[in-house]
Amino acid sequence: MLLKFNKILLVTILFFGTLTRGYNFWFEDSQPCFPKNFHWGVACSRFQDEGEIGCPNSNWTYWQKKVNLQKSGSSCGWRDTYKEDIQLLKELGCNSIRFSIEWSEIEKTPGVFDQDEIQHYKDVCIELVKHGIKPMLTLHHFTQPQWFSEIGGFEKKENIDLFLRYSKKMFSELSDVVKLWCTINEPTVYVLCGYLMGKFPPGKILAYALGVDVLKNLFIAHNEIYKSLKNMPNGLSCEIGLVHQYLKFDPYRNYNPIDLVTCKFFNSIMYDLPNEFLLENKVVSYSDITVKKTKLELRESKIADFIGLNYYSRVLVNSFYSKDGSFVRESDVKTDMPYCIYGEGIYHAIKDLSLIGLPIYITENGIADKLDINRDRFIREYLGYVNKAIREGIDVRGFYYWSFKDNYEWDSGFNMKFGLYEVNFETKSRSLRAGSKAYQEIITQWKNEILEK
Ligand code: BGC
Image (cartoon, rainbow, N blue to C red; front, side, top):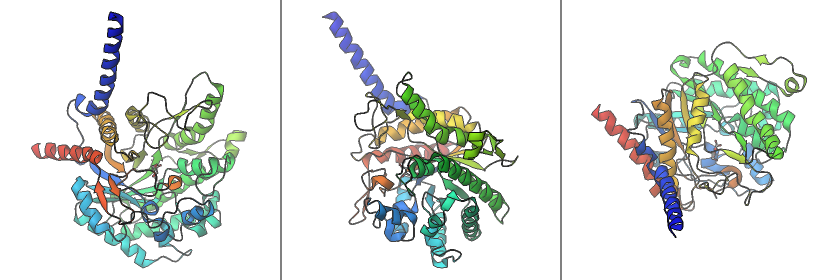
């Protein structure tokens, strides 16, 4: 009887211990210490916010039709509502926003730049700055003009010049106002989803050799853009970085050879090759891997002004058993995506990337949580770990929650609700989710501390 009681007591303590740890992590570790000039932002991308109606020339508009995905329509909109949305950013307390330029709208036909469209970006950025909100612009966020894909996109090294031409044009038009630039969003995910898993265009499955070469070209493209933009007027006053999704595949069972081999396969693209580039300035082509040729050294100097870290969770590969195709353990708290809440992971990712020796912006982190039961906990836990890294002296300069509003989640369509703001896609109305208030509170707390200092 006593034994049974003790067992119940122990389980209760462990259960509530885990619960409070999740919720109270933020307060456990004494006071938060985000720097005075910290960027508190939200992140989004143009195609995900504007859909096929706003981006008719995008390769994703063609892809959606081809594979019969849920239509993106006009998604949550941003082009016509940005002034109202800026009020929402102020309501949250944000001083920055990350969003992307849709290349396919700027350059509908090769070599012809649409000045009205460029003017639209200028108007948005000027309005943001007027309200004390710094824009961070991404030049390539998964989508590209259909014409660029049709001539081989990043599969061909010679096409990099076309991306460079567009990037230089945008920088020359906007760098007076925009001081934070991201070249490419998540090169590894672009390859993983487009060349290994077939979920993104061009929809290739296990095209490993081609995928490695595309990754190489994306790194070279980043390198070319960084070098060129730094040499342009305003180059030195702007911070230009690469956005990397830190995703490591770990075996569910260390002794399962299939899990181990699968992890090795995916990590070679998601972890090893980006590390060679980020830490050693080296890019590797498929033939280099196979015939062990010397790797191409890009240059001696630094690869960027900052590293943008996108972090969501870990991936546990379980080749034998997974109830619903997800990458979690039974005991994990699941998100609506096939992964769990794993706050500790962002701390390790920051530590790992800090070895590059560049400042870090967390350019994306957030949770898909339709019922809004875990968003509060997620925000406090992940930000608690970001805070821990800052406390240990790592130069983390900003945090951008993904995403500002519910939007089009690529191959998952509108099923994933990442937004701080819930969107009614019929009326386009937005309402702040209860769980999102944690983000608002943390920003307010930071503001109050700064005022006191
Ligand atoms: C991408 C976003 C995406 C988010 C959530 C990131 O990999 O940059 O476009 O919506 O993850 O899945």
